[in-house]
Structure formats: C-alpha cells, structure tokens
Length: 190
Image 1 (tube, rainbow, N blue to C red):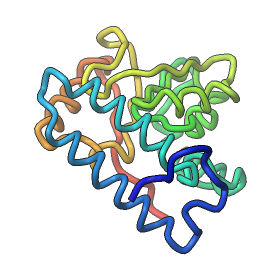
Image 2: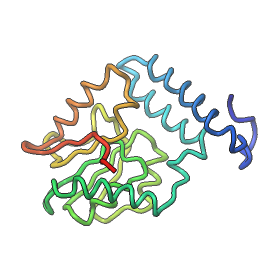
Image 3: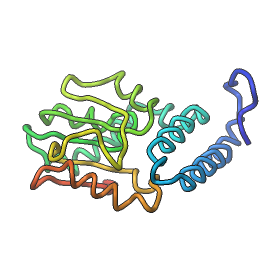
Image 4: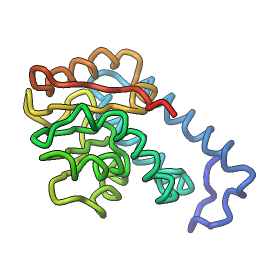
C-alpha cells in the first residue's frame, strides 16, 4: 500500500493503519537493499533511507518527544560517557537526528555524526553544537581519515545492513578508530 497520489494528507493513512503501512514500506525497501549488489549498495542504501523518511512522515525520527529523546540519550551517556576523555573525538555512525552527538558534545573535543539519510542529517544540523558536525555517509566507508576517532558508536545500525556488509562495517569502524579506541554497538541497559 502506498500513499495516494497528490498532496499528502495528515489523515493518510489513518492512525490505526500506520504501523501496517510503515511495515509494508520498510519491507519493500528492505527487499531493494537485499537485491542490491556490492557496487550499488551505498547508493541504494542512501536512496531507501531517504525514501523511508519521505514515505513515512509519521516515522518516530520525525515525530519525537524532546524529553523522551533527551532521557534516551542520557542513558547512553551515563553508560558510555565515562569511556571518553575531554580530548576525544566521538563518532556516531548512523546518527539519525543527532541526539547522541548533542549529549556527548559538552564532554569531548569533537563529535561527528554520520547517517545514510539526507533528511536525518538535515534534522541533526538544525541543532548542531559548535564542536560537532554531521554528514551524509556510508557506514561501510565513513568519510573520515583512518585513526581519527577515539570512540565510535554504531547503534541500531546492524539490523539495517545487508548481511554481507556486517564484516565490512566492523572493518570500517576499526579503520577509523585510533589505537586504544573504543567501539559500542549495543543498546544501553534500562
């Protein structure tokens, strides 16, 4: 089921159908990603995530409660902030709206957020701290020099990767980490 032609309506789909419509859209985009070849994967990934946020305007990435988002990011910071030093560069690969970068920014020298979606990077840049930058980029080949990050976070990314790309993602993280750097891809414990 896709959105009717013409101007999108605030009433489409009805709230009771949104989960189903969202699931169907993601399922179709997932099939496109799985059918992509290694040569086209980066452009297909960018395309499907741009389309997801365009076709699902009610996606939680667009409609978020600021207090809930701050509490969520605070959980991450409480768990991992102690692993960073004021001189560190923190990279969030798959940064979405940039909430985690905004939470880490006061505690470190530099924060970098990378996301496959132009829409998410645009949202992140709306509230960008002075020591942060956000960029569209690949989680398989982040647009950063080798050994440029002290702490890399890649949360809620693995489940969005093509299965063949997981080892390449982990190798990319290792490449941008400085010797002795840290990496986290797990969710904080509530």
